[in-house]
Length: 61
Image (cartoon, rainbow, N blue to C red; front, side):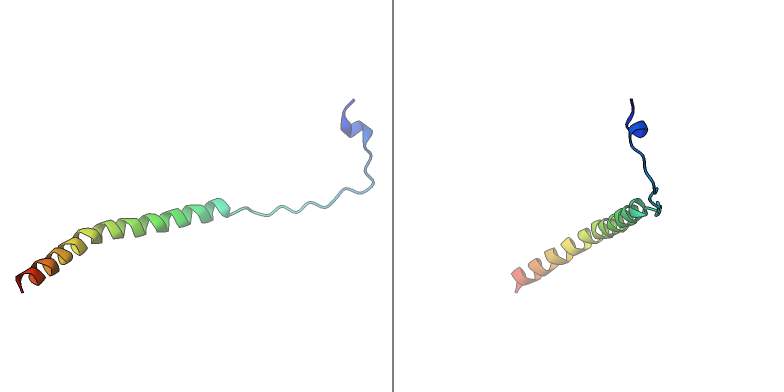
């Protein structure tokens, strides 16, 4: 015997379905973080060159 045959319900609860956009939100965050990482990786070589130039000029003084 299944439970549905043993249980009687007088009032069926109202169900409200809500769109779960957490996956879309997660994907957007991943996209933004990827863009930041890509921009950072493009800037790193420039930053390293600037640091080397500063170090060389300080050594020459």
